[in-house]
Length: 118
Image 1 (tube, rainbow, N blue to C red):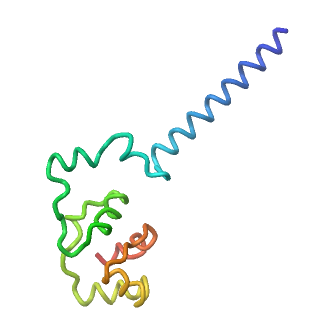
Image 2 (cartoon, rainbow, N blue to C red; image 1 turned 60 degrees about the vertical axis):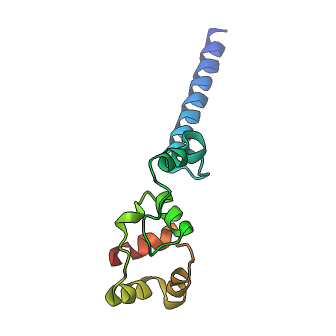
């Protein structure tokens, strides 16, 4: 009986530990984008004037994507030099650069590929 209780509580401890690890993983990576819903970061940003256009070269969806990656849109240059554009075209391809210039939202992978160009 004592051995069975010991196994029961060890199993519960392992399950609890796994649940804690999953919770930490989901908190850090936020794959379902739940942090804004839980912590209401958008409301606090708008109270302090966070909804103003932080970078005139970016549209709202591009700024939102940068915020999702943890990047302040104001830190991204508002004008792209010809050398930077050539670098972007080498990293992402001409078609994708044209889409982004037309208002397309870059993905996280594209940002990390081209961040050396900024």
